[in-house]
Amino acid sequence: MKFGLIGDGKIAQRHRKAISHIGGEIAWVYDPLKYPTFGNIELSRHVDYWVICSPSDKHREQTLLALENNCKVIVEKPAVLPWEPLIESNDVNVVLQYRWADIPKKADFVFCHVVRDNPSFWNSWYGDPRKTGGFFYDLFIHYIDLALHLDCEFRGRVTTVKGEQGRYIDDLDLFSLDTQDLYNRMYEDIVLNNKGIHPQDLFQLHWIMQEYSRKYGYGKELLEKSILIPRYWP
Image 1 (cartoon, helix red, strand yellow):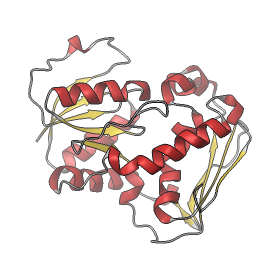
Image 2: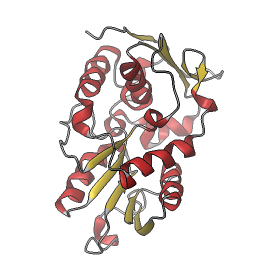
Image 3: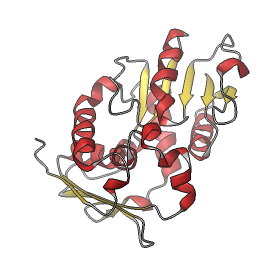
Image 4: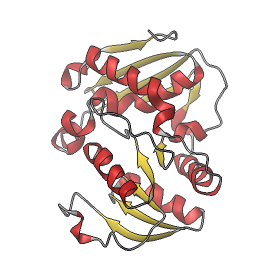
């Protein structure tokens, strides 16, 4: 099985290891932060999957291009920005790796406290809501997906003050999980067992992210707010 990798940053390294884990081959790598156009890779070189780890504002465009080239897609979250429509295709697989964790079937709450005190974050594309879909969308989507999946309340906060960060399902510390193992399991299911998470599986999540992004804000207005999304979704 051959893969083309778009983006070659920190997250892409997890994909590299997962591809190796299932015995796959990386046929080409394109880093959009270094090169402005796709002319730097040979799209005619056949691969089975495009793995999209580029800045979030490129995900939808690159996913559509992959589908036009008759390739399947593994795309990092978010598959699209909150103001973009989902791409309904069983050939698109969205990375929500916590779905592959050994977690309870039920919970009371999912909690996420994020600290962003490093100026380099705000000066990078990660700090630009136009490229991420907003801090709410970018930082909380994994955990709101878990809350929706577990039918429980979500509590969140983003601060700029140095302190302890936390990601919990009730008393389960998500930081204690082996993230690479989750990616390996995900690749086993997507590539070997054809059991991925497709965009059309995420209509409710996408709607919730849209609604609460508008409520809490896309940019720095989100900072220091206590975020609460109830168990029974409006």
